Length: 73
Image (cartoon, rainbow, N blue to C red; front, side):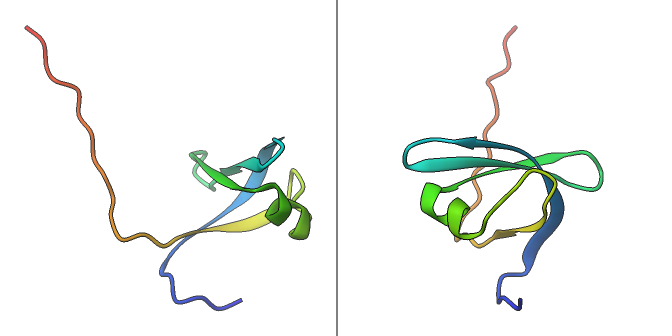
């Protein structure tokens, strides 16, 4: 599979939560961090995603937001 998106992280599916419309897919990266993806239920079925599958999380976005809590005191 070749994609134009350069932001790709390989990992293993650790958890899947299926809803009526969406599926939450938890991917553990080699360093132990996790990435959570929300995809359509139909896409999760079409890809036949299973816990333990090796997958690639692909990020294609036009913006990244950063937030910071206001300091108190």
